[in-house]
Length: 89
Image (cartoon, rainbow, N blue to C red; front, side):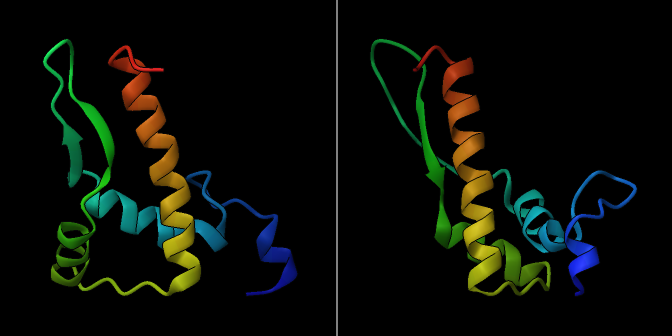
């Protein structure tokens, strides 16, 4: 990767440096942990990392620590959006 790659989005709007994390997230985006709530909808707490790891392995995807950090940032935004949609703030 070159410094020029960092500021150059690809045709899908994802920066090259984030492609691996976005691809990994999309593979495991169904593996959520939720906490039941008797007074309303379940609250999403985050990805189930055991299931996510298995999903990545089955998909043949390996990510390093930097991409895992990026995946967790994506996860954080997704958790906030899903919980807000469910009425949690």
